[in-house]
Length: 449
Image 1 (cartoon, rainbow, N blue to C red):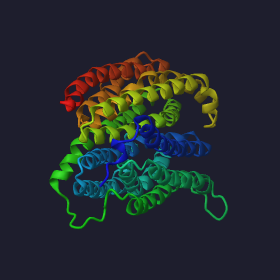
Image 2: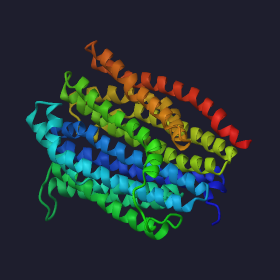
Image 3: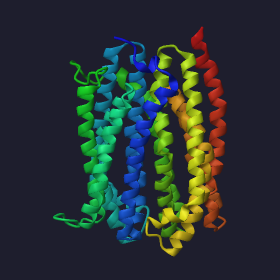
């Protein structure tokens, strides 16, 4: 077979054609999370607080699914670079199998553990009721999300980012349209409230998953998901897990971070939790282009590492850093200038507006450095150094962030807590810089010899 375009086309063109579609689809994906919250805020502040408190579990689900996808993506792309096509097929099939197993776990979580989860966070019966309803639907029907992400990663792993974008955008647009219909009961549909937001979300994910399967089977010709003789093989699961599990841990740390931050903020007020939740959605939206670049970089670096092309790896990293810096610095400036109009979208009360403006401005100072840590994490993952990525994320979201936030909360001044985020970003970017220099010297530059 002729060599994949990831080993031959110009790097700027590849980064644009592979990252831009992913970034656009992620923007739409993130936008429907924002739209969800905008509509839920019309139900009431308690409803928005409940959805915010559900974040840790939905993030954990995201962590396991995306982590498996990252591992599958890197292993599959490397096999393609080495021209081991049957192994590439097996990697794709194994990734699908692993996420089906994880679905069973989340189904059981939704059935048995969700009410206990909210009891750990709040005594407010309304928030508990809203949160349990929302999260149960999201976990019991999580098969759509798990399969959606897996199929998108399969398309990305062979450079077909446009097809990945199509499947994700179709699901997101479906959700955006269904949200107001199901939440408020438009036309022949009943008013479902918070449950409607959850139903709209899982329905969009199922639509995207079905479309993703179709695109992989009919247009992703470099891998064959129907390769005969599949059975789970411990060696392949190990290969995917060696890269994927650290990624899972990295994203799971975000889940733990959100859970702990909610509990640090609750003694101040539930409004502080809502402000934090709004900022989280807005910041996620602002960072989606950055994650799009990261998703484009992983298969490019992995493929060219397998093909032993160090010059192309250096070029991918350099161009990724430049694009990331431009995007994140621009995002930081916009969020510093326009926090009030953003909060106004969420029907913010005077108290929420006062807290939220400070939250958005101070937390998002970290964007000035986050581009470096995110791009570096993608490079580390692609080169099989996921432990390094994990440690950087642990510093950003756990080792530095949470103790600093707790320490600042002891002052009794809510507005000081938000400085924990830029402080943690400084520590993480410093560690990323030191390890990137070592990795390039030891793993990439040696390919030329």
